[in-house]
Image (spheres, rainbow, N blue to C red):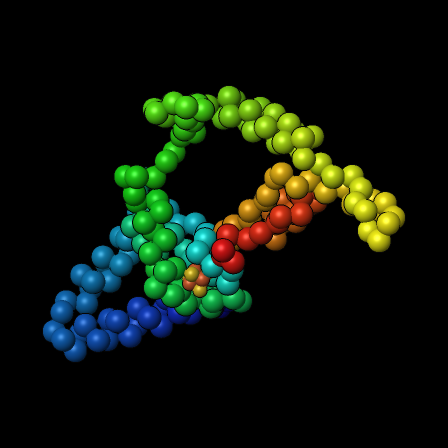
Length: 190
Ligand code: SF4
C-alpha cells in the first residue's frame, strides 16, 4: 500500500490517540467516528503561512465558510508538519469580522471611506503608477563627471509578501524591475 508522509502521520497519530483514550476509559469507537466526521464534512486545502520568510505550508479545513481546522503540512520539505505559534494563529486571518473583503477608497481630504469595485480600482492604480513613474524617473546620473544611464524609477516602491510562491515572486519582481523600481522589499524583512 502506498502511504504518504501525511497519511502515515494521520494513521499513527490516530492509533496513538485511540490507545491513549482507551487507557483513560473513553469509548474509542465514538472518538473514531468524531474524527471521521470532521474529515468528511470539511473541505481541505493547502496554504502558506504569510507571517515570515520561512514559508511554512499548512492544511486548512473549511466548513460553512469558516476555518474549522489547521495543521502543518507533513509533505512540505520546509516545515514537515510543524507550525510555530504565529503559524498556528493564521486561521484568524479568515475567521475575523474585521477582515476587509472589498476595495475601500478615501478621496483626498475626505473623512469617509467609500466602497469600490476592482473595475474601479485597477485602472486607478495603473494610472497612479504610470504618473508617478513618469514624474520621478531618472534616466542618467553624473558619475565622476560622466553621464551614466541608470533608468531608475525612484517614486514607487514594491513590497512582496511571504505568502507569495516562487512563480508569483518571479513575476512581481520582473514587473517591478521592468518599471525601473529599485526599492523592492519583502514584508517579512520590515
Ligand atoms: S511565522 Fe512560523 S509558521 Fe509562519 S512561516 Fe514563519 S516559522 Fe513558519
